[in-house]
Length: 489
Image 1 (cartoon, rainbow, N blue to C red):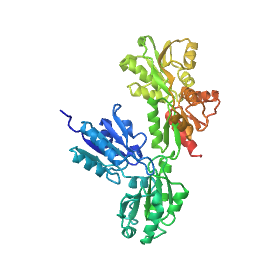
Image 2: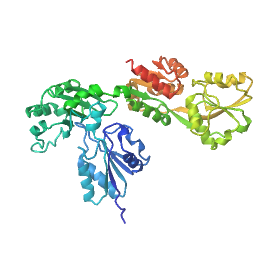
Image 3: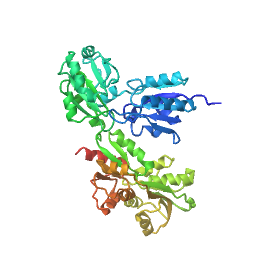
Image 4: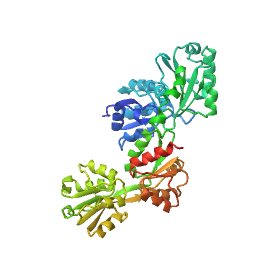
């Protein structure tokens, strides 16, 4: 007996910024068996998908490679009839120039249940990210969304250009960047004032968003000179002049327009990448290292009076082996810095000793007045001996517990080229600098941002002077250093 058809979910992903997807959309992404997705979605939009979900790219980009709509429809139907849960993830909103209606009808005709999950459409979102409200009290009380790229097979246009020219509000054109001259000419011929403000927004809500502003009469030439490419939307109306006044991204997203390579281990890279993306950066994830657990047998912790943890990775590996935070009762717990202390807090442990700087020398200083007879240092397999040597010099008995090792992760050609072509490359450890250099063969190209003196010293040993070293040796300090440097460039 054949399986019952699965449900097809037409989900709007928004125009680029992954944060604009709805809660319902994210929920469906996390449960779907099959996801057929556009190309014009955020680079991390699919991270919520199950590891065993089938991902199929059926995207279209104006002027580029096309997947015929009929093929997309058949793929949706094929998987649904096989009993799978299918998400059709579409850029923007499924029912605003997204051909979602066609896909819904094709499914319903085959007896397949459909749910539509609206998304934020580009005409509103891209304009908003450029500081342009498509309606504004006293300026525009209506907005019209218009396709700038009609079906070329139609014998005549469906657009009434004189009526559109007379429309008393904002006009937002989708997909019309290559037809902008013709659009402007038709509107002016229909009576729209040539001096009316106009703006074109390329890659709206993406980190690489850029916009040009002019008048209806000049905007086509301005966009051509700026080499504006699809995807882009055009806003025509008096509200287009408000972008300069309202423009908020430079303040709220100080890294807008910057490309930043993140080289830390993949498990830790996502949090830093998300933080940088929220600040407007286009993030290139190029992890050159990975964490390999060693799964050691833990010693009797009751024998020690001091436990030192030297990284958040060490904390995670310790608790993977420990299982119960109560085993740390009676120990003085020292963390090498705020980041490691925060990792301990997630397991219910508040560190007794936390230096302000995340380096071994600072922890040595912070332990000066702490009585120590026997210490356990939980750390990576290969690590600096500053801390154990200093404690032994004080007469303490010191044992080392290697919890994990840091090993190289191969870097493919695309990731290498993207990272070396970025504005910045970030390094959160000496090993990330060493292994990235080994994988890429060079560090030439981006400005090098170091998390602290140990990492900076490794960069110098490789023959490169860091452009910036974070004063606070944490990921937050690294981000602050990036923002400060970007403001000067």
